[in-house]
Structure formats: C-alpha cells, structure tokens
Image (cartoon, rainbow, N blue to C red; front, side, top):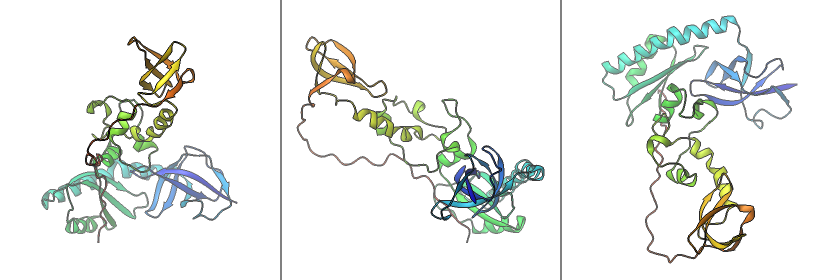
Length: 296
C-alpha cells in the first residue's frame, strides 16, 4: 500500500504531494524529505492517506524518508544558527569586493548539504559567474544563485501582515500571481496604498484570491442604475454591498434605503451609455516578479 501527504518545505514555503511507505506520520510532524533539489526537511500539512494511482498522475513530487529525529533537529539548528549566517556574511563580502549590483537577501542551506541557494535582488541581469566560483571554492558543494522580486523577499523575511495573521505567501499561496487595482475597487477596499499594500510594498495577495468570491456575490445583485421594485415602491439602484447581499435604492423623493436582494425585483437594467472614443487598454499594474538564474 502506498501513502501520500502534503508537505511544506524550503525557505520559499513550497508545497507539494509526497509519497511515504508507511502511515505512521501525522499532521504537523516534521520530516526528512527527498526532492529534486536534494535531501531537506519539511512539515506535513495533511493527514496521510492511501492512493493507488501512478505517482505522476497523483502529482507526487518526492518522498518522505522519515520523521525527524533528535540528530536531524540538532543538525538543522546548526545550519540555521551557524552555517547559514556565516555563508550569508561570506557571500555579502564577496559581492562587495567584486562590486556587483545586487542585494543579498537570504541563504538556504539544504539539510543534506548537496546545495546552497543564495537569494538576491537586482535591477537587471547580473554576471555572477566569478562569485559562484568563489562560493564553490569555499564550500565545495553546488551553488545556486536565484534572483527574486520584492514579493519573494517578503515571503523569505517577513512574518505577519496587517491583519495579524502570518503572510499568505508564507503559509498557503504557491504562486505569486498579479494583483490589480481593479480587484481592490471590486471589493470596495480603500484605495489608500498604505492600507492595501502588503509587507512587500505591492498590493496584498488576499485581494486576488478573494476576488473570485466577490465576483460571485456581485453577480447575484442587480447592476447599479437598474430600475427595481420593493415594498415601498419603485426606484433606482445606487449602491451594492456584495458581502451583506444588500442594494441601496433611491426613490423619486431622493430618499435612500437598503434592502436584501431577495426583497428586490428587477424591472429593467441600467440605461445604456452612449459609446465614446475607445481609450487605450491600461497597462498591467502588477510588477514583474521573479527572474531566476542558475549557475553555469
């Protein structure tokens, strides 16, 4: 019998399905896993469950070797407290010596020691071949230089968002997809950049993954400008509240009142607007996020 579980692993909080040959593991257990990057550690996010299909069809990306033991925990503590800070300082020193236009953000030393990944920010492409040679000569292992964007920087370094919860990008979001101002407007969020920007300085990721829910709720409401009938009489829709599923109706005497959508009967849609000259499509408001480099 084959078993699988969802595991979060790596500095970038990767998430994937992993095969395990026994069912003795539990949610939240820390474990040793084998991925295409090498041997590393992770945390189990789901119950361990059996499966019968092929690994490729089930989305299996690696295997769980075992539950972490005392020796593994000691080695992980050594990596986090001693080796990674030392590797960070050495790389930063070499960057300064070679006057490279890049900012070192973080270092990830895999538990198995097969690879060290250096994450950095830069305005454009950087020729870091000589830097890779310096690092490989110092640590005698595979070196990977990975260029990231500011959203990935927040995922690596930040902890909590304005709402008091851990960053979404650190806990469950796999891919950092574009977020636009249109999504904020659809959700009637304040357009004050300081209140709708995350720790990375970009629009908050929750605006994107909540947008589908708002679109669904909004589709159940009449459009603004529609002619409707309620108990009080007929009027025009002037405002919508998707979350409470209410519409605000203005009557002939200019008074306004809110009603549940179930109590509203649509008589006609909003009046059609005359078409004007077409304006150019707005530019994509989302930044280019991640550009990755692999050592030659």
